Image (cartoon, rainbow, N blue to C red; front, side, top):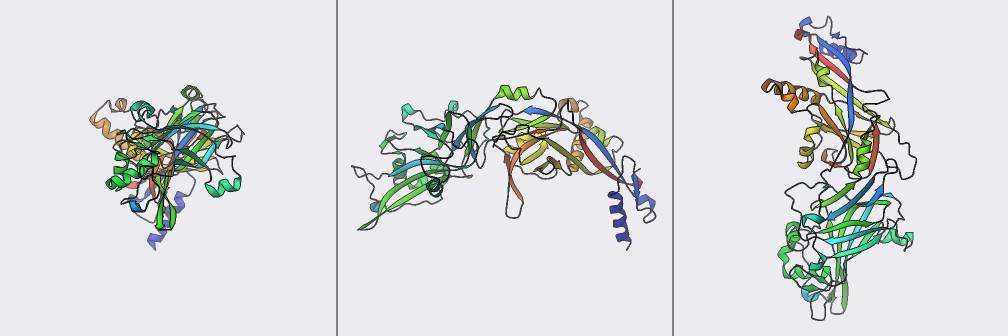
Length: 486
Protein backbone atom coordinates (compact mmCIF):
# COMPACT_ATOMS: atom_id res chain seq x y z
CA UNK A 1 0.00 0.00 0.00
CA UNK A 2 2.86 2.36 0.79
CA UNK A 3 4.24 1.80 -2.70
CA UNK A 4 0.89 2.71 -4.23
CA UNK A 5 0.66 5.91 -2.17
CA UNK A 6 4.23 6.78 -3.14
CA UNK A 7 3.48 6.43 -6.86
CA UNK A 8 0.27 8.45 -6.54
CA UNK A 9 2.10 11.22 -4.71
CA UNK A 10 4.85 11.37 -7.34
CA UNK A 11 2.43 11.49 -10.25
CA UNK A 12 0.30 14.14 -8.60
CA UNK A 13 3.31 16.34 -7.99
CA UNK A 14 4.67 15.92 -11.53
CA UNK A 15 1.44 17.03 -13.17
CA UNK A 16 1.08 20.04 -10.92
CA UNK A 17 2.03 23.34 -12.55
CA UNK A 18 5.31 24.63 -11.14
CA UNK A 19 8.26 26.89 -11.90
CA UNK A 20 11.90 27.10 -10.85
CA UNK A 21 10.82 26.67 -7.20
CA UNK A 22 11.13 23.08 -6.07
CA UNK A 23 8.31 20.90 -4.79
CA UNK A 24 8.70 18.28 -2.07
CA UNK A 25 7.18 14.92 -2.84
CA UNK A 26 6.12 12.20 -0.48
CA UNK A 27 5.88 14.40 2.58
CA UNK A 28 5.14 12.31 5.73
CA UNK A 29 5.13 9.13 3.62
CA UNK A 30 8.88 8.46 3.46
CA UNK A 31 11.78 9.63 5.60
CA UNK A 32 12.86 13.18 4.74
CA UNK A 33 16.27 11.98 3.58
CA UNK A 34 14.53 10.02 0.76
CA UNK A 35 12.21 12.80 -0.36
CA UNK A 36 12.34 13.53 -4.12
CA UNK A 37 12.58 17.17 -5.05
CA UNK A 38 11.29 18.17 -8.50
CA UNK A 39 11.80 21.47 -10.27
CA UNK A 40 11.16 22.93 -13.70
CA UNK A 41 12.78 25.54 -15.85
CA UNK A 42 12.22 27.21 -19.21
CA UNK A 43 15.16 28.35 -21.33
CA UNK A 44 15.56 30.24 -24.58
CA UNK A 45 17.03 28.43 -27.59
CA UNK A 46 18.73 30.36 -30.40
CA UNK A 47 18.73 29.25 -34.02
CA UNK A 48 20.13 30.13 -37.42
CA UNK A 49 20.03 28.94 -41.04
CA UNK A 50 23.06 27.12 -42.46
CA UNK A 51 23.85 26.42 -46.11
CA UNK A 52 24.48 22.78 -46.90
CA UNK A 53 26.95 22.20 -49.70
CA UNK A 54 26.09 18.52 -50.11
CA UNK A 55 24.66 15.47 -48.33
CA UNK A 56 25.17 11.72 -48.55
CA UNK A 57 23.16 10.98 -51.68
CA UNK A 58 22.59 7.22 -51.64
CA UNK A 59 18.86 6.73 -51.37
CA UNK A 60 16.13 4.30 -52.31
CA UNK A 61 14.88 6.85 -54.86
CA UNK A 62 16.52 8.99 -57.48
CA UNK A 63 15.58 12.48 -58.66
CA UNK A 64 15.68 13.91 -62.14
CA UNK A 65 14.74 17.30 -63.56
CA UNK A 66 15.00 21.03 -62.97
CA UNK A 67 12.63 23.31 -61.09
CA UNK A 68 12.32 26.74 -59.53
CA UNK A 69 11.00 27.12 -56.01
CA UNK A 70 8.26 29.75 -56.41
CA UNK A 71 8.71 30.98 -52.83
CA UNK A 72 12.45 31.70 -52.97
CA UNK A 73 13.12 31.69 -56.74
CA UNK A 74 15.91 29.17 -56.13
CA UNK A 75 16.65 26.74 -58.96
CA UNK A 76 17.34 23.08 -58.30
CA UNK A 77 18.72 20.60 -60.85
CA UNK A 78 18.92 16.87 -60.22
CA UNK A 79 20.61 14.10 -62.21
CA UNK A 80 20.44 10.39 -61.48
CA UNK A 81 22.78 7.39 -61.63
CA UNK A 82 21.65 3.80 -61.48
CA UNK A 83 23.30 0.41 -61.50
CA UNK A 84 21.35 -2.81 -62.12
CA UNK A 85 21.04 -5.86 -59.95
CA UNK A 86 20.99 -9.53 -60.98
CA UNK A 87 19.51 -12.36 -59.01
CA UNK A 88 22.25 -14.63 -57.74
CA UNK A 89 22.58 -17.69 -59.94
CA UNK A 90 20.61 -16.07 -62.77
CA UNK A 91 20.18 -18.46 -65.73
CA UNK A 92 18.87 -18.20 -69.29
CA UNK A 93 17.28 -20.60 -71.76
CA UNK A 94 19.32 -23.22 -73.55
CA UNK A 95 21.13 -21.31 -76.33
CA UNK A 96 20.04 -23.93 -78.86
CA UNK A 97 16.40 -22.93 -78.26
CA UNK A 98 16.93 -19.23 -78.99
CA UNK A 99 15.54 -18.11 -82.32
CA UNK A 100 16.67 -14.46 -82.26
CA UNK A 101 19.89 -14.48 -84.29
CA UNK A 102 21.77 -12.17 -86.64
CA UNK A 103 22.93 -13.10 -90.12
CA UNK A 104 26.01 -14.75 -88.67
CA UNK A 105 24.03 -16.84 -86.22
CA UNK A 106 24.87 -14.79 -83.12
CA UNK A 107 22.24 -14.41 -80.40
CA UNK A 108 20.64 -10.95 -80.42
CA UNK A 109 18.07 -9.06 -78.40
CA UNK A 110 14.85 -7.89 -80.02
CA UNK A 111 14.18 -5.31 -77.30
CA UNK A 112 16.69 -2.95 -75.73
CA UNK A 113 15.77 0.03 -73.57
CA UNK A 114 16.03 1.53 -70.10
CA UNK A 115 12.88 2.71 -68.34
CA UNK A 116 12.62 5.01 -65.35
CA UNK A 117 9.39 4.73 -63.35
CA UNK A 118 8.16 7.98 -61.81
CA UNK A 119 6.72 7.77 -58.32
CA UNK A 120 6.05 11.36 -57.34
CA UNK A 121 6.79 14.59 -59.16
CA UNK A 122 6.92 18.33 -58.63
CA UNK A 123 5.84 20.94 -61.14
CA UNK A 124 3.95 20.55 -64.40
CA UNK A 125 3.15 16.98 -65.52
CA UNK A 126 2.76 18.14 -69.15
CA UNK A 127 6.03 20.05 -69.28
CA UNK A 128 8.50 18.74 -71.85
CA UNK A 129 11.87 17.94 -70.27
CA UNK A 130 15.06 16.60 -71.82
CA UNK A 131 17.67 14.19 -70.52
CA UNK A 132 20.78 12.51 -71.88
CA UNK A 133 21.61 8.94 -70.90
CA UNK A 134 25.31 8.13 -70.62
CA UNK A 135 26.91 4.72 -70.24
CA UNK A 136 29.33 4.46 -67.32
CA UNK A 137 32.92 3.53 -68.07
CA UNK A 138 33.43 1.91 -64.67
CA UNK A 139 31.35 1.22 -61.57
CA UNK A 140 31.20 3.41 -58.50
CA UNK A 141 32.74 1.33 -55.74
CA UNK A 142 30.80 0.89 -52.52
CA UNK A 143 33.74 1.40 -50.15
CA UNK A 144 32.93 5.07 -49.72
CA UNK A 145 30.01 7.44 -49.29
CA UNK A 146 28.99 9.53 -52.28
CA UNK A 147 27.68 13.04 -51.74
CA UNK A 148 25.11 14.93 -53.76
CA UNK A 149 27.75 17.18 -55.35
CA UNK A 150 29.86 14.28 -56.64
CA UNK A 151 30.93 15.22 -60.17
CA UNK A 152 30.35 12.04 -62.14
CA UNK A 153 31.21 13.58 -65.51
CA UNK A 154 34.56 15.04 -64.50
CA UNK A 155 35.63 12.09 -62.36
CA UNK A 156 36.22 9.73 -65.27
CA UNK A 157 33.05 7.68 -64.91
CA UNK A 158 31.44 8.50 -68.27
CA UNK A 159 32.43 6.34 -71.24
CA UNK A 160 33.02 8.78 -74.13
CA UNK A 161 30.84 8.45 -77.19
CA UNK A 162 34.02 8.62 -79.30
CA UNK A 163 35.04 5.32 -77.73
CA UNK A 164 31.68 3.67 -78.30
CA UNK A 165 29.92 4.81 -75.15
CA UNK A 166 26.15 5.16 -75.23
CA UNK A 167 24.85 8.73 -75.34
CA UNK A 168 21.10 8.94 -75.93
CA UNK A 169 19.05 12.14 -75.64
CA UNK A 170 15.28 11.88 -75.15
CA UNK A 171 12.41 14.21 -74.38
CA UNK A 172 10.05 13.24 -71.58
CA UNK A 173 7.14 14.44 -69.54
CA UNK A 174 5.37 12.96 -66.54
CA UNK A 175 2.21 12.51 -68.60
CA UNK A 176 2.81 11.17 -72.11
CA UNK A 177 0.06 12.84 -74.10
CA UNK A 178 0.80 10.79 -77.20
CA UNK A 179 -1.28 7.98 -75.70
CA UNK A 180 -4.69 7.91 -74.03
CA UNK A 181 -4.98 7.99 -70.25
CA UNK A 182 -6.33 4.43 -70.26
CA UNK A 183 -3.52 2.97 -72.33
CA UNK A 184 -0.91 4.95 -70.43
CA UNK A 185 -2.26 3.76 -67.06
CA UNK A 186 -2.64 0.12 -68.05
CA UNK A 187 0.60 -0.10 -69.95
CA UNK A 188 3.22 1.50 -67.78
CA UNK A 189 1.98 4.42 -65.72
CA UNK A 190 4.37 7.38 -65.51
CA UNK A 191 7.56 6.20 -67.20
CA UNK A 192 10.55 7.64 -69.03
CA UNK A 193 11.81 5.43 -71.86
CA UNK A 194 15.37 5.55 -73.19
CA UNK A 195 15.87 3.30 -76.24
CA UNK A 196 19.24 1.56 -76.49
CA UNK A 197 18.71 0.55 -80.11
CA UNK A 198 21.40 0.90 -82.72
CA UNK A 199 24.77 -0.78 -83.05
CA UNK A 200 26.75 -1.00 -79.84
CA UNK A 201 30.54 -1.22 -79.54
CA UNK A 202 31.80 -2.90 -76.37
CA UNK A 203 34.94 -1.88 -74.53
CA UNK A 204 36.90 -4.66 -76.23
CA UNK A 205 35.93 -3.30 -79.67
CA UNK A 206 33.38 -5.99 -80.55
CA UNK A 207 30.18 -4.80 -82.18
CA UNK A 208 26.65 -5.92 -81.37
CA UNK A 209 23.18 -5.29 -82.82
CA UNK A 210 22.27 -3.27 -79.72
CA UNK A 211 23.23 -2.96 -76.07
CA UNK A 212 21.01 -5.80 -74.87
CA UNK A 213 22.50 -8.13 -77.49
CA UNK A 214 25.85 -7.45 -75.86
CA UNK A 215 24.42 -8.29 -72.42
CA UNK A 216 22.92 -11.57 -73.70
CA UNK A 217 26.14 -12.61 -75.39
CA UNK A 218 28.03 -11.99 -72.15
CA UNK A 219 25.45 -14.10 -70.32
CA UNK A 220 25.99 -17.10 -72.58
CA UNK A 221 29.74 -16.72 -73.00
CA UNK A 222 30.52 -15.78 -69.38
CA UNK A 223 27.80 -17.07 -67.05
CA UNK A 224 30.14 -16.38 -64.13
CA UNK A 225 29.54 -12.66 -64.72
CA UNK A 226 25.89 -13.17 -63.74
CA UNK A 227 26.33 -15.04 -60.48
CA UNK A 228 25.84 -11.85 -58.42
CA UNK A 229 25.50 -8.08 -58.72
CA UNK A 230 29.19 -7.39 -58.07
CA UNK A 231 30.38 -9.55 -60.97
CA UNK A 232 27.74 -8.16 -63.31
CA UNK A 233 28.51 -4.53 -62.49
CA UNK A 234 32.28 -4.99 -62.75
CA UNK A 235 32.33 -7.13 -65.89
CA UNK A 236 29.23 -6.33 -67.92
CA UNK A 237 27.23 -3.21 -67.04
CA UNK A 238 28.66 -0.56 -64.68
CA UNK A 239 25.40 1.41 -64.92
CA UNK A 240 23.97 4.54 -66.56
CA UNK A 241 23.92 8.23 -65.75
CA UNK A 242 20.82 10.28 -66.60
CA UNK A 243 21.57 13.99 -66.90
CA UNK A 244 19.04 16.80 -67.19
CA UNK A 245 20.18 18.64 -70.31
CA UNK A 246 17.38 21.04 -71.17
CA UNK A 247 14.08 22.59 -70.03
CA UNK A 248 12.76 23.53 -66.61
CA UNK A 249 9.54 23.05 -64.69
CA UNK A 250 9.46 19.43 -63.56
CA UNK A 251 11.28 17.32 -60.98
CA UNK A 252 10.57 13.58 -61.02
CA UNK A 253 11.12 11.09 -58.25
CA UNK A 254 12.50 7.92 -59.86
CA UNK A 255 11.15 5.07 -57.79
CA UNK A 256 12.52 2.29 -60.01
CA UNK A 257 14.85 1.89 -62.96
CA UNK A 258 15.04 -1.15 -65.20
CA UNK A 259 17.01 -2.52 -68.14
CA UNK A 260 14.58 -4.34 -70.43
CA UNK A 261 15.71 -7.00 -72.93
CA UNK A 262 14.01 -9.79 -74.89
CA UNK A 263 14.59 -12.62 -77.33
CA UNK A 264 12.51 -15.28 -79.08
CA UNK A 265 12.92 -18.92 -78.18
CA UNK A 266 11.38 -22.20 -79.27
CA UNK A 267 8.90 -23.85 -76.92
CA UNK A 268 8.40 -26.72 -79.38
CA UNK A 269 9.45 -27.23 -82.97
CA UNK A 270 6.29 -25.43 -84.07
CA UNK A 271 5.93 -22.88 -81.27
CA UNK A 272 7.93 -19.72 -80.58
CA UNK A 273 7.55 -17.30 -77.67
CA UNK A 274 9.14 -14.11 -76.37
CA UNK A 275 11.37 -14.21 -73.31
CA UNK A 276 11.61 -10.87 -71.51
CA UNK A 277 14.54 -10.33 -69.19
CA UNK A 278 14.42 -7.35 -66.84
CA UNK A 279 17.21 -6.15 -64.57
CA UNK A 280 16.21 -3.66 -61.87
CA UNK A 281 17.93 -0.86 -60.07
CA UNK A 282 17.46 -1.75 -56.40
CA UNK A 283 18.82 -0.71 -53.00
CA UNK A 284 21.32 -3.56 -53.20
CA UNK A 285 23.22 -1.63 -55.89
CA UNK A 286 24.16 2.02 -56.30
CA UNK A 287 21.38 4.59 -56.73
CA UNK A 288 22.74 8.12 -56.61
CA UNK A 289 21.31 11.59 -57.20
CA UNK A 290 23.49 14.56 -58.08
CA UNK A 291 22.01 17.88 -56.99
CA UNK A 292 22.90 21.42 -57.99
CA UNK A 293 21.35 24.28 -56.02
CA UNK A 294 21.29 27.98 -56.80
CA UNK A 295 23.95 29.03 -54.28
CA UNK A 296 23.43 32.75 -54.84
CA UNK A 297 19.81 32.50 -53.74
CA UNK A 298 20.63 30.22 -50.82
CA UNK A 299 23.26 32.63 -49.56
CA UNK A 300 20.78 35.51 -49.76
CA UNK A 301 18.34 33.54 -47.61
CA UNK A 302 21.02 33.49 -44.91
CA UNK A 303 20.61 37.25 -44.64
CA UNK A 304 17.00 36.79 -43.54
CA UNK A 305 17.26 36.74 -39.73
CA UNK A 306 13.51 36.94 -39.10
CA UNK A 307 13.20 33.15 -39.37
CA UNK A 308 15.23 30.08 -40.24
CA UNK A 309 14.94 27.90 -43.34
CA UNK A 310 14.98 24.22 -44.15
CA UNK A 311 15.12 23.41 -47.84
CA UNK A 312 15.82 20.17 -49.68
CA UNK A 313 17.45 18.63 -51.52
CA UNK A 314 20.73 19.47 -49.80
CA UNK A 315 20.08 23.19 -49.58
CA UNK A 316 19.43 24.70 -46.14
CA UNK A 317 19.25 23.31 -42.60
CA UNK A 318 18.45 24.95 -39.26
CA UNK A 319 21.00 24.84 -36.44
CA UNK A 320 20.04 25.22 -32.77
CA UNK A 321 22.29 26.33 -29.93
CA UNK A 322 21.11 24.53 -26.80
CA UNK A 323 21.36 26.44 -23.49
CA UNK A 324 23.28 23.69 -21.70
CA UNK A 325 25.11 25.98 -19.24
CA UNK A 326 21.89 27.75 -18.25
CA UNK A 327 20.05 24.46 -17.77
CA UNK A 328 22.67 23.13 -15.32
CA UNK A 329 23.37 26.41 -13.54
CA UNK A 330 22.47 25.59 -9.93
CA UNK A 331 21.38 22.09 -10.95
CA UNK A 332 24.79 20.50 -11.42
CA UNK A 333 23.86 17.42 -9.37
CA UNK A 334 20.24 17.16 -10.53
CA UNK A 335 18.89 14.64 -12.98
CA UNK A 336 17.21 15.90 -16.14
CA UNK A 337 13.93 14.00 -16.35
CA UNK A 338 12.59 15.64 -19.49
CA UNK A 339 13.72 18.32 -21.90
CA UNK A 340 11.14 19.32 -24.49
CA UNK A 341 11.49 21.62 -27.47
CA UNK A 342 8.90 22.55 -30.11
CA UNK A 343 9.65 24.32 -33.39
CA UNK A 344 6.84 26.39 -34.85
CA UNK A 345 6.38 26.47 -38.62
CA UNK A 346 5.64 29.68 -40.49
CA UNK A 347 2.94 29.15 -43.10
CA UNK A 348 3.93 29.48 -46.72
CA UNK A 349 2.64 32.81 -48.02
CA UNK A 350 2.80 31.56 -51.60
CA UNK A 351 -0.52 29.93 -52.53
CA UNK A 352 0.80 28.76 -55.90
CA UNK A 353 -0.28 25.20 -56.72
CA UNK A 354 3.38 24.33 -57.23
CA UNK A 355 4.43 25.59 -53.80
CA UNK A 356 6.64 23.08 -52.00
CA UNK A 357 5.45 21.08 -49.02
CA UNK A 358 7.13 21.08 -45.61
CA UNK A 359 9.39 18.10 -44.78
CA UNK A 360 7.43 15.27 -43.20
CA UNK A 361 10.20 14.30 -40.74
CA UNK A 362 13.08 16.15 -39.13
CA UNK A 363 16.13 14.58 -37.53
CA UNK A 364 17.76 16.36 -34.58
CA UNK A 365 21.41 15.36 -34.35
CA UNK A 366 24.64 16.86 -33.01
CA UNK A 367 26.15 19.19 -35.60
CA UNK A 368 29.59 17.63 -35.44
CA UNK A 369 28.14 14.12 -35.85
CA UNK A 370 26.21 14.65 -39.09
CA UNK A 371 28.82 13.19 -41.43
CA UNK A 372 29.40 10.14 -39.27
CA UNK A 373 25.66 9.62 -38.74
CA UNK A 374 24.82 9.33 -42.43
CA UNK A 375 28.02 7.75 -43.71
CA UNK A 376 27.76 4.88 -41.23
CA UNK A 377 24.03 4.36 -41.64
CA UNK A 378 23.00 5.26 -38.10
CA UNK A 379 19.37 5.30 -36.99
CA UNK A 380 17.63 7.48 -34.45
CA UNK A 381 18.36 6.09 -30.98
CA UNK A 382 16.44 8.51 -28.74
CA UNK A 383 19.68 9.25 -26.89
CA UNK A 384 21.94 11.26 -29.19
CA UNK A 385 19.57 11.67 -32.14
CA UNK A 386 15.80 12.15 -32.41
CA UNK A 387 13.12 12.27 -35.10
CA UNK A 388 10.01 14.43 -35.11
CA UNK A 389 7.02 14.17 -37.44
CA UNK A 390 5.48 17.24 -39.00
CA UNK A 391 2.33 18.05 -37.02
CA UNK A 392 0.04 19.60 -39.63
CA UNK A 393 -2.65 20.32 -37.07
CA UNK A 394 -0.44 22.60 -34.96
CA UNK A 395 2.16 23.53 -37.60
CA UNK A 396 4.98 22.23 -35.41
CA UNK A 397 7.84 19.78 -35.05
CA UNK A 398 8.16 18.59 -31.45
CA UNK A 399 10.98 16.73 -29.72
CA UNK A 400 9.30 15.61 -26.52
CA UNK A 401 12.32 14.51 -24.54
CA UNK A 402 15.95 15.09 -25.46
CA UNK A 403 17.15 14.82 -21.86
CA UNK A 404 19.71 12.11 -22.66
CA UNK A 405 21.35 14.41 -25.20
CA UNK A 406 21.30 17.41 -22.84
CA UNK A 407 22.99 15.39 -20.09
CA UNK A 408 25.56 13.93 -22.51
CA UNK A 409 26.54 17.36 -23.86
CA UNK A 410 27.00 18.72 -20.36
CA UNK A 411 29.08 15.70 -19.38
CA UNK A 412 31.22 16.06 -22.51
CA UNK A 413 32.01 19.64 -21.63
CA UNK A 414 32.90 18.87 -18.01
CA UNK A 415 35.20 16.02 -19.00
CA UNK A 416 36.75 18.09 -21.79
CA UNK A 417 37.54 21.09 -19.58
CA UNK A 418 39.00 18.78 -16.93
CA UNK A 419 41.62 17.60 -19.41
CA UNK A 420 42.03 20.79 -21.46
CA UNK A 421 41.14 24.34 -20.26
CA UNK A 422 40.78 25.42 -23.91
CA UNK A 423 38.38 22.60 -24.76
CA UNK A 424 35.37 24.86 -25.43
CA UNK A 425 37.36 27.07 -27.82
CA UNK A 426 38.51 23.96 -29.68
CA UNK A 427 34.96 22.56 -29.83
CA UNK A 428 32.74 25.54 -30.78
CA UNK A 429 29.86 23.25 -31.76
CA UNK A 430 29.79 21.38 -28.47
CA UNK A 431 26.22 22.53 -27.68
CA UNK A 432 24.86 22.73 -31.24
CA UNK A 433 22.43 20.43 -33.01
CA UNK A 434 21.07 20.52 -36.56
CA UNK A 435 17.59 19.87 -37.90
CA UNK A 436 17.73 17.75 -41.06
CA UNK A 437 14.85 16.52 -43.28
CA UNK A 438 15.01 12.72 -43.52
CA UNK A 439 13.25 9.69 -44.94
CA UNK A 440 12.73 6.89 -42.43
CA UNK A 441 12.35 3.17 -43.16
CA UNK A 442 10.80 0.85 -40.58
CA UNK A 443 10.33 -2.91 -40.46
CA UNK A 444 7.07 -4.79 -39.92
CA UNK A 445 7.39 -4.21 -36.17
CA UNK A 446 7.68 -0.46 -36.59
CA UNK A 447 11.37 -0.41 -35.66
CA UNK A 448 13.45 2.15 -37.57
CA UNK A 449 15.91 0.33 -39.84
CA UNK A 450 17.21 3.18 -42.00
CA UNK A 451 17.42 6.95 -41.91
CA UNK A 452 18.64 8.82 -44.98
CA UNK A 453 18.54 12.36 -46.31
CA UNK A 454 15.28 13.49 -47.85
CA UNK A 455 16.31 14.26 -51.43
CA UNK A 456 12.87 15.39 -52.57
CA UNK A 457 11.89 19.03 -53.01
CA UNK A 458 10.65 20.35 -49.67
CA UNK A 459 10.77 23.74 -47.99
CA UNK A 460 9.74 25.25 -44.66
CA UNK A 461 10.39 28.35 -42.57
CA UNK A 462 10.65 28.03 -38.81
CA UNK A 463 10.20 30.59 -36.06
CA UNK A 464 13.64 31.69 -34.91
CA UNK A 465 16.66 33.65 -36.06
CA UNK A 466 18.40 36.66 -34.53
CA UNK A 467 15.59 39.04 -35.56
CA UNK A 468 12.72 36.72 -34.71
CA UNK A 469 9.50 38.73 -34.27
CA UNK A 470 7.50 35.79 -32.93
CA UNK A 471 7.58 34.15 -29.52
CA UNK A 472 11.13 32.82 -28.89
CA UNK A 473 11.96 29.14 -29.09
CA UNK A 474 11.83 27.76 -25.55
CA UNK A 475 12.97 24.52 -23.99
CA UNK A 476 11.06 23.15 -21.01
CA UNK A 477 13.09 21.13 -18.52
CA UNK A 478 12.04 19.01 -15.55
CA UNK A 479 14.67 18.23 -12.87
CA UNK A 480 14.67 15.80 -9.98
CA UNK A 481 16.92 14.87 -7.07
CA UNK A 482 16.73 13.25 -3.65
CA UNK A 483 16.51 15.50 -0.62
CA UNK A 484 19.77 13.97 0.65
CA UNK A 485 21.55 15.57 -2.34
CA UNK A 486 20.81 19.16 -1.17
